[in-house]
Image (cartoon, rainbow, N blue to C red):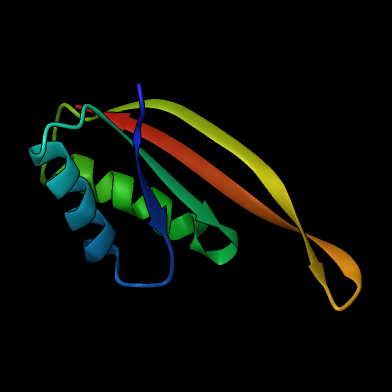
Length: 88
């Protein structure tokens, strides 16, 4: 089973919440929200906003954290990420 994915970035949180609502209305059962770096707090805020305002029965099925390696000016940097799987 393939999950719908919402990549959370620097745009307003309501955009990502709207994307999740749209996916749930299309029949998706699970959505994976993914964020890196400074956007991690936005990702967590989106999940709380969805649960508080739209879906009181929203379940957080899984949370994964880790880091991605990237090259910047001939050196490796590590960027933290979070993946939160939610379902109705």
